[in-house]
Length: 89
Image 1 (cartoon, rainbow, N blue to C red):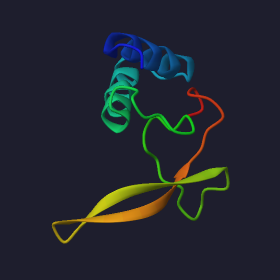
Image 2 (cartoon, rainbow, N blue to C red):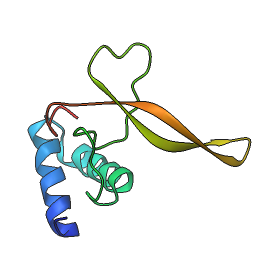
Image 3 (cartoon, rainbow, N blue to C red):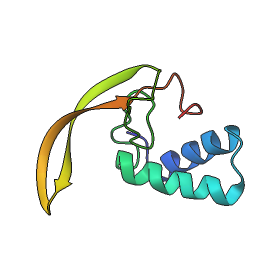
Image 4 (cartoon, one colour):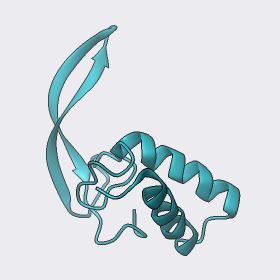
């Protein structure tokens, strides 16, 4: 895994390449850091942990995750979006 600073710089670069303004890119990087553990777990270029709902027509991947149901942690397997690049994410 790259250093935290390397991850933040790389994620910021991808966000700017995707057309986000400086301030919005910083927010996207913060979310990506939270969702991936600062790049420790980036699956299918999904930097933001976006699930693949019924309307999603692109590629998907299934992973173990958890949801809070009635204040309790429930382990599940769910579908997440899969992207061809970090910029697409």
